[in-house]
Amino acid sequence: MKITFIGLGLIGGSLAKDLRKKKFATELIGIENNQKNAKKAVEIGLVDRTETLVKGIEGADLVIIAIPVDKELEVLPEVLDKISANTTVIDMGSTKKVITDKVANHPNRKNFVAAHPMSGTENSGPTAAIDNLFRGKITILCDQEDSGPQHVALAEKMFQALGMDVAYMSSDEQDHSTAFVSHLPHAAAYALANAVQAKEDRSIIFDLASGGFRSTVRLAKSSHSMWHPIFQQNCKYVVESLDVYIKHLQELRDSMKDNDFDKLKDLIINANKIRGILDGENPHFVKNEEKFTKLYTK
Image 1 (cartoon, one colour):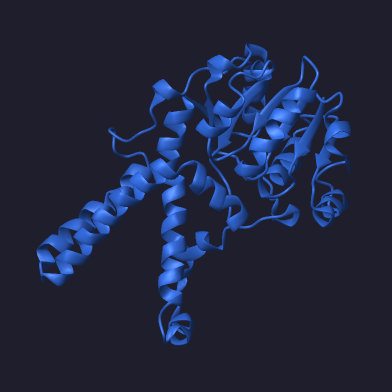
Image 2 (cartoon, one colour):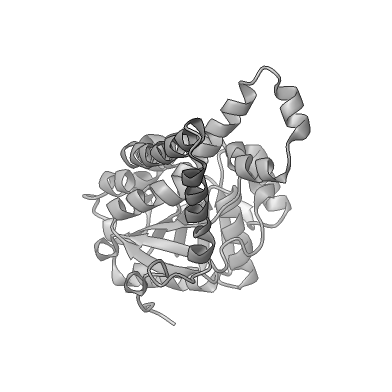
């Protein structure tokens, strides 16, 4: 199998590393506009070589698009224009509705599988690629009924090889859900970083910064070139998630402002329930098996 990766940063590079390790493909080709990154990706063995877009997707069995979602709006239609009849195209974008709408009427829409692997770090570039980034995580396949069964099957097989669970949603459901569990945490981290940097005596604050602060603000190091277009494309649902978050921040603030420390305690205790939810102890919040169906292939 020949796989072509468009974008060789954290996601594309980590996919290439793991799929090579799993012997999922015999040939790995990279397409990367940043020539420094392209050279580094070959040097560290992420791909066998890099090519231009036209030459890189020629004869590819699978094309993986792992670039910022604003760039994908330009690249995806071009890729679908040029692929062969049997080529499968899978994207890794964090937003889906704008992207699927863009190619809804493309004659090769059946070749495209809209996916979002729920994994990542705040780092970028080929050297950010790490082993097993996706193992034990969930990937979302969107609007699978609009993709050809053979193309969905290959996507499932690839994500299975990476050790991922597969969930199925509409593009709109995906954007709504990830606004809360992925996009909101990044927005909150950017706001926290800006709030602390706005302090006049911030040098003292940074001298005192502990592990708690560093882990909370870690996402604020994420690249603007990736996250600005994500917020832009999913603006409606990110604003909704921020409104909910701000409501709870205000409730926490007001409990202290009003010296209502019993209310403050209750808010903290309620928040502590997140431990059990994330550990799967609460039956009302465990993995919704109706969203996880059998793979087409084994």
